Amino acid sequence: MKLISKVLDKLPTPSSKDLAMDLGTANTLIYVKGKGIVLDEPSFIAINTQNKSIHAVGMEAKVMWGRAPREIRIHRPIRDGVINDLEPAQLMIKHFISKTLSRIRILKPRFVICVPSGITQVEMKAVIDASIQCGAGKVHLIEEPMAAAIGAGLAVDRPQGFMVVDIGGGTTDVAVISMGAVANSQSARVAGDEMDKAIVQYVKENHHMIIGDLEAEEVKIQVGSAYSQDEGESYPVRGRDLVKGVPKEVRLNPGQVAEAIQGPLQQILEIIREVLNDTSPELQSDIHRGGIFLTGGGSLIQDMDRYIEGYIGVPVRKVEDPLTSVVKGAGRALEEFQRFKKAFIT
Ligand SMILES: Nc1ncnc2c1ncn2[C@@H]1O[C@H](COP(=O)(O)OP(=O)(O)OP(=O)(O)O)[C@@H](O)[C@H]1O
Ligand SMILES: [Mg+2]
Image 1 (cartoon, rainbow, N blue to C red):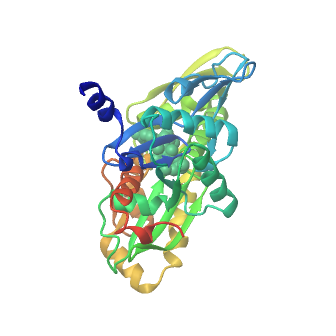
Image 2: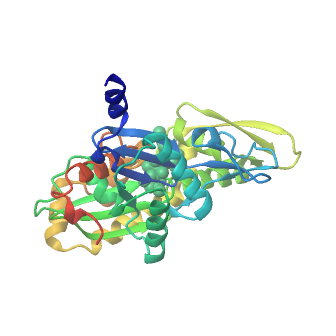
């Protein structure tokens, strides 16, 4: 009897297997219904090219980027918010899901997957197929800014407009939300990764030195600023001298990083302007009153809110915990499925 109850305890209830996933260019997060966020890992997978086995996944694979031996290939299977490399993506998703769900399944789970607002039919099909391959019974897609708005606790179902700007790793999503649905949105492939590339280019041009993407990301996270004029505290970056070919170190301060990332930042402003211009006067007036809600890892750049506010002329509010707001909102939509039904892409 005791043994039976022990076994039964281990069996998940049917609803506990439903999950929400933010399959991001930089990070994958999984929310399990009734439990909350159970996984938060970089979207990386390392595969042994000789025997095709998985060598490492998530953070373990990310730290190998640019450092792996020849037989190990590191993949970033999500590019610009969508599946770019099908087989590694499926292996990565399967691995993450197997870490979060019990192997014993009575019913096939429901998956809520977050996608960028500009997703094409083909890209949607890829994400649905991958989810089914990974054991999903039903798949529901939700646009990332909508999920972020729900995650930030905004009253999305009221007849009142909100603007959400989600600056992720691969894409910046700008959306106007009203009455439980997306009224207007745009997604552009310029976000954190483009800022890293701009820093690599800046260091090349100004210091005649080649640095890796991860080194650029680190300096962006440590001293990245949207429009700092002051020199501030500098941070070291290490790489290879372009001329001499030897290891070299330089230090970058917030002002230099701000200068380096101006290109991608200006492009982000342009998308916000376009979406605003394309919005009805009623919703525009709501946005002026309520402000722009800023989320995604890119919103953690120092002074990003003041920068957007200064150029766009609308108050900007940073959401709490911008790296988890999308999956939290998708999780909430899963928990209160009937209430948020309109939020899903039909
Ligand atoms: N403190 C920080 N300062 C600046 N940038 C940061 C910080 N922390 C994370 N980032 C950047 O945020 C980005 C990742 O954000 P996020 O996890 O929201 O992206 P994602 O959801 O994986 O990508 P996407 O939504 O585009 O598919 C990376 O480019 C990362 O370098
Ligand atoms: Mg994201």
